[in-house]
Image (cartoon, rainbow, N blue to C red; front, side):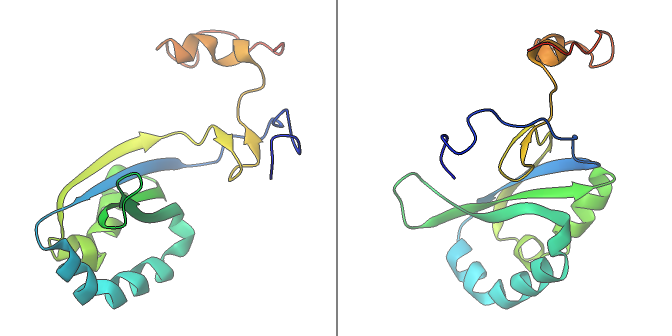
Length: 141
């Protein structure tokens, strides 16, 4: 899809549930752990594929070597997402030196098919750090 195909993204409903960004950075010996636990990791992510918005390995820009993994995971709570992630052999084997969890809002893009805000005014206050419910949602762009 090129920008000319859809120059103005359509408004779409905000995806339901909470999305968690999970950033995993490789530790020492990660390549060996990755090779040893690949089948178990793939079985895990395939079994739970509907929980992932997307997931995949990380590389440095222009690099070939893997340096970690990124997951966008849907869940009802951080504890639930951590339990899912910790059941993945890549996490349980100690391959990652660090695992970071953040809440993430799917706001715009091809995955959700557009943008979640009806107008710029509707998100202006929230973007500046204010609570999402203390400013009326404007309908003009």
